[in-house]
Amino acid sequence: MAIRQILVAPHPTLRKKAAVITKIDESIIKLARDMIDTLDNAGGVGLAAPQVGVSKRLIIIWLPKEEPIVLINPKVIKHMGERICTEGCLSFPGMEAKIKRSREVIVRATDLEGNVFKIDATGLKSEALEHEIDHLDGILYVDKIEPGTLEKVTEKESLEDVIDDVYNQSHA
Ligand SMILES: [Zn+2]
Image (cartoon, rainbow, N blue to C red; front, side, top):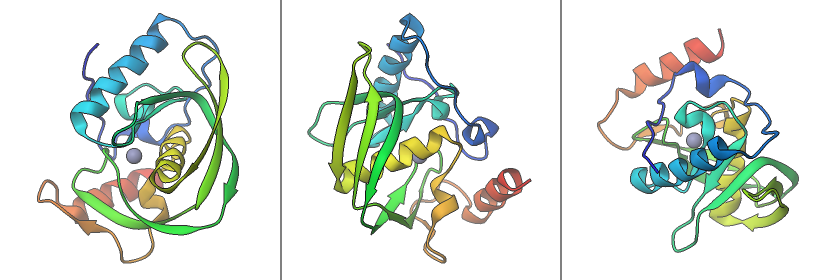
């Protein structure tokens, strides 16, 4: 197990459509374990493989006081309702914004043993699932922000520079 480096926007891998995982081999199991360690170290509720530089369809969801969940090839099969969330992303350190998300989602995925399962989620879990699955299609939360709500919450980065970089790359 190891902590992997989390890519920060505007890294081009964050904009790629990630590949479907067709075989759960040792490299996928190691990737999932490393991502759990990385998420534990970084302190978020979710992480997508492209954020550690691996363009494959695997995400980790880890809510406070719960066990981490590994989802391979996750797909939202149903969205229900709408709500506004205040959201951040480990690839945009020190920022958050208001985003429109579903109130509830049903997601289908495969676990590390190859079993297909479904999650019916509301609240933070629903939001995290939508956010991380978006990463697999190169969609970042800054693409969806409610106008005027992006805020710098720490002094880590210059907000204007990060936004310029993201939009220069993603809309090129
Ligand atoms: Zn993110």
